[in-house]
Image (cartoon, rainbow, N blue to C red; front, top):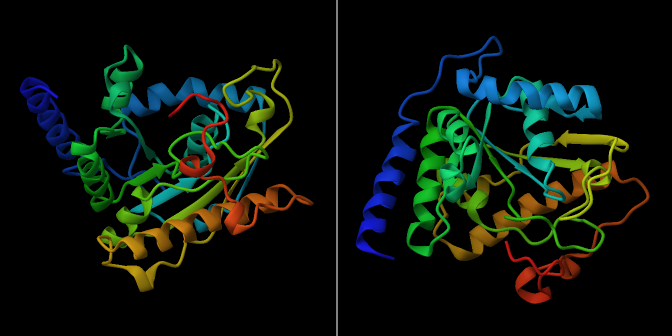
Length: 271
């Protein structure tokens, strides 16, 4: 990486952290409010989902008032939309962690920056810095949305695969609740990396569960075993929730959970 790119990255990292130096005003539910750019960008998406897709939202009582991590499974490209809509419908203005490169895209990048989405710096030299921006958001009471798998699941039956450790590291250091969220049904409308079916097909269900118990691991974000255990608990909670939305189906045994490092990428797309 060149010196000029390093300098730019450092400036972008500082900007990403500084934008969370203070929270927005509170909404009527006592949570951080959307802000104009967020509300403007979200409005047409919310309207389309309401008009075109049947939705069943469960577990809203498990969403804290502020300062928490929402961790969800990832089956299809529509998941970001249904995940965000579930939280917005329950008056939570989630700040989703997205690839830093998307911050430079036309239109999408404009609204991502101004609605305070959190850039993930993929290069190894800045991996920790992406979490620094997320920590800053959590400190001012924001909800940080994460797909711990990091990409669409490669499991043939679409169960969650082995998760990355970012959500666990954040939780162990900040000690904020991690709320598992399972979603199911959007893949019938948009197949993973595949065909769009029109009109939309079937019911989309999203369910939030009780916060994952990580209290015995707090403060051990630099302990590899503790981080791996916390990650496993988060993914297990998401999987157990998903099983309630897929009655009659059995998730894979712990030793059969899809791991891209071991089992590869059956879509042959990388991340």
